[in-house]
Length: 462
Image (cartoon, rainbow, N blue to C red; front, side):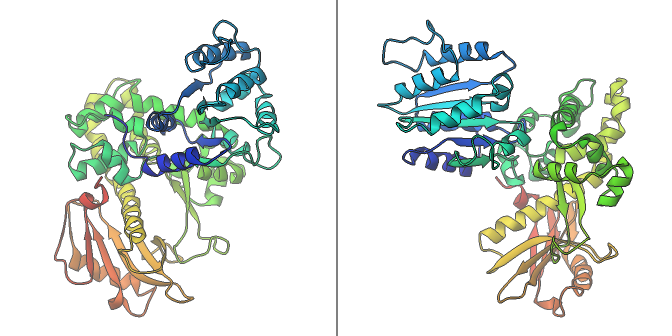
């Protein structure tokens, strides 16, 4: 399948490209999220003369030699052939490329920039001096890209050499449910929901799913054999995100095991997890959840949960069968694994349901002045509502919609509405004025006025 989606990201890059004298663009995000595909697609669509270089684990002279070879194919003026006379250092490289961009634009992409910094720690300072030179940089445009999220954040902080030198800072995230559906056009909506619950919105993982095979066959291929791709990727995520504090894997496993409050996580670790929690939330591996009516600064009712559906699948249902799979029993346990995914899929579907409501609110379909959408529960954790939509017609936030998502093929709207109304009475004295959103996988029955039926065909519509 070719390139799909990323419409907003491409538009931001194009706006940056068309801005006169634009300073560098910074593109970053977790591994496998599609950064390289995005910037190469942008380069192709823009028609720009492009020099693409990806940092590796090579010493600085080898990096510069590789850059020189690639530069030879896009530099045409002057007497210097970079392939015959490679760049001596980064100053030399940038000076030559700037000279080549005096008359026509040249796009320089430095991918995996943190890797380049390992072999050339002076590079950020060199780049700052180059960008600040009085004569300018001609029509040379620079995109700096990387996967080491903490390093990419630090590059933008005060006192960092490149602080204030980026005209565009673009963080690339996994696909949302409706975006993931674009990569699964041949599947029924309910099956798209299952796939999203297994691999999440990471484009590479979505591309691995063979749509002509059954769910069980795909689970066997991708997770049911020793060394299967999703087993390897789970290990990679836990290992490569080790920059997120001192013990990210232990924190993630604690949350996956039901330790969702700060003190519970601290007890499980025997240490203060605050810094690690902040970093994992920043990486969008964890999310901090609180009742939608509460203020984060004032409430202690925050809980943590795994934000990435793939990681929740890897640390949850898949982990229960990991030992059997490693012993070669995958073909025997795949069906059991699929059946054990019901609770996990239900939780993923709830968040996909809330995401769908946010899309509808942004389109103005849920009424004016919607300001927040999220779950709600009482102090004791009871009477939970999957989604509450708050509007602010004046100075006070009021609920205008409550909703519930069920990982069931069908839902009886009338029966569910009565239960939701009892819970919503904790939020408003006029439950009849609310809209009730009911979400099932395939069908919502007994729908009456004031009920908004939603199915996977709505949530996972491309």
